[in-house]
Length: 431
Ligand code: IFM
Image 1: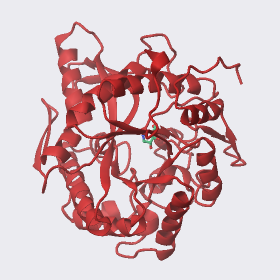
Image 2: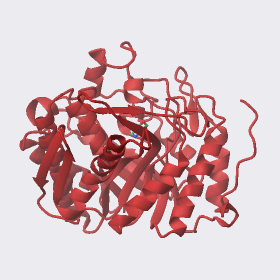
Image 3: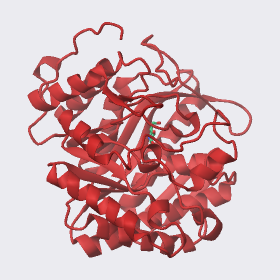
């Protein structure tokens, strides 16, 4: 099948980043979290990031150099509204200028409003589990709409809301560090409502827009294929983690149910709230039932002996194809808003791209309405709790000098973006 696989002319190749992970010098809930010593390495700090705020022009050229025609960035709420109700005109203009430069360079802006981080006042004054969060997000979204006006962006309101809910409100391992099932339920329902509210503001200003979210999807599998409880868990996890939030935005009803763990039922003020499904796919997770709370053991297994990636995730392109066929059920265009590999040497990334693109194009042949692929990430950057260890970048960044250098995947990506053919990468000598 692979020989005949081509990327149609209208299919978009792009790259993705987020503000906090790259821009540098941002004061928000994550910088507070870091100072409290909550990262894997207690001393690690995001600090100057990879200086993307100041090096935007250079990074935009790097984006063009790999043949990308879409660039996903996020707007940093903490920069835009550093104090509640005080909006920073310089930051707003800075973002507007960036989007204008993208347009001038023939690159479509893909704009995320919320990518995990919050201004420092947010959790104290209008946290996600309180209704006041909706007005706060509405005001912010209105400003974001102004930044994006007339630039035909692809808009992502929230990046990986389920990750925020699980990590921030259930396990308490990322900000705001809450560990409370009831508050988690209120928070995720309000995040879904906040999407709807932001959507209203964006449509009011832009008239027409393509608006969605980025959904982190995991290809779940039972740890013991024969075990009924592992299989039941797999089924429930897939529905709750991969689909419940998207279902809510489409139907207006949020339903999350894990017996003994969570029962969330909430209604949204409307339905049909997305124009596209944004998929972030990285790996597969095996689930095993254990007879004590939280009843789930979660692991990455190297089933096919391809070698776990450096961050410890299974390299499982087949799961990508499977997830794409699953999201076909929404009957909406699909954008891959993230996919990538932590490859600290640089020799595995072309093969990873090839195997994942093959799955993607086969899914397209099977009727998935795929519009574009955004590689995570343009640059090596700050990987949250993992700090500065992982390297997802198409471009290698020297974290001391901040010099950017192409990895072998740049050439591979560029060739595919130009030739529109899926070709296996030539074997790479070890770097
Ligand atoms: O770096 C993150 C990104 O911020 C959200 N999606 C997953 C990436 C890799 O972990």
